[in-house]
Image (tube, rainbow, N blue to C red; front, side):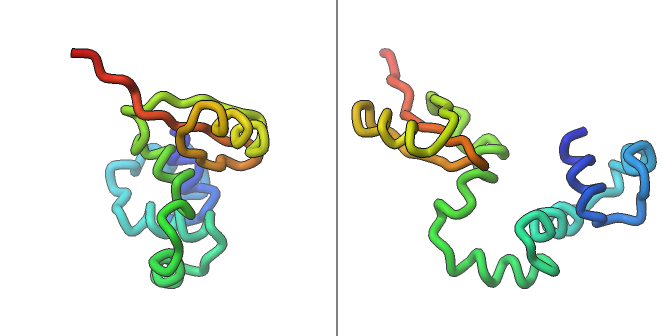
Length: 113
């Protein structure tokens, strides 16, 4: 449902209500979700978005990678702001991902044998 709400807000289909979009959810294609991402990032279409994103460092899309589960194998420590996360990082290490006003410190999980 969260993705359907985002797709509805981005107006990437002809559906005008969430119930209508839910009814046709099996018809959604990758092009619809790419158009949704482009709209959320402030681009007119996916082609313009992709051309710009391809020139950016990978960290520019870490928030979306986090949403997609790219860091699910890692320990995640959430903070109210990036400053607090950076302070924690200095003591513990990890990788910081900004998420709106918040930030998450991502650590590789220790493996046990």
